[in-house]
Image (cartoon, rainbow over all chains, first blue to last red; front, top):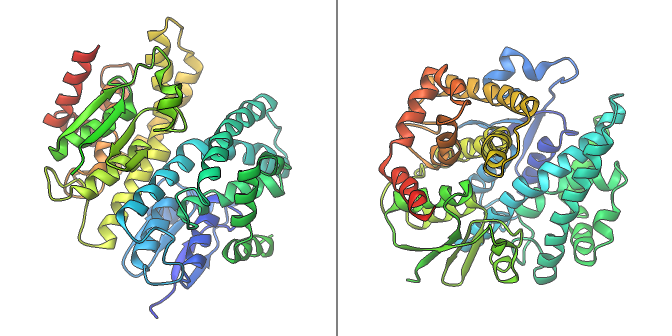
Length: 219
Length: 217
């Protein structure tokens, strides 16, 4: 096997954990490279060479240097198509189109309100920052509307893009995990029959359990 | 082969993104207008095309899709041998770089752009006053993003490589508005970005999208 791929950034970062989950699902060996964000390492000239926006994660293998977690996940799925979970990014164009659609939905509709809530409810208290109650209520309301759409979809389909667990479901794990387990917002998922069932299934995948373990070990 | 249908509104930036892609690929399609002023995008019928009640939605036979960037990706792949090549096929590496810059548009460029367009275009359209503090905040964010673009476009003719791809195309609706607004100062002060905007907005396929807008308004 070629040298392990490298993932730069703390496992506690939602975007980093998205990539870690994908690598573990695909059974791709990786080396985790810590980035000391408290010391501003992500804004250092050396780091900006591999991630010009000064954010985590960054990714490298022998062929390429990449950033943007969802682009990294797609690359890993295409390059290592024969490894691990072969259905993660679909095995035909129609399956891929459906997965792309729901990864976009995650990025455009689920991620914005859930990211604000994760920051306000899970990270701000730990960083001794004041919470913004009106931002919290606004984004709870937005997320609620999104979950209503998911409730209907997941009544018709086992996973978001179809019958198989895919990148579309995986993309949701990082933010949903913090909401359910740190921010005390698990009810947003469990109070809905189909979303509750889906959340139970995806959060108990072995790959995600391993990521959560990495997060715990890093504190 | 079933005819492709796009359900949307010519004034919607996301709809324009899909139209630009279809014109670049030179493929037949039907445009089905969605009367948003009348709330048609929230009707039961439309929700069966896009459960989020947003435009555009896309159909080709049994395939139904929403999310403009998933639709363009499907079209560019399915009709890879027609019209303009909008992908970078040939290796996982070049496709990865394409996906990277599509994600950058999606997660770095679009959020501050969408906020600015809401303040400067939508609010004015409905007779509300833009909030100058919000405008300043998001112009500052957009400026930081454009600094990264300036550095990138100094080394690469287009965002993902040597030729125009979906990564550039996805920016068209927002940059077109900015060209005609006070935000243009952010682009004019960055020569590589300015040249790139002039180049991509002059493409015949984009001119066709603007013409469609004029006809339907």
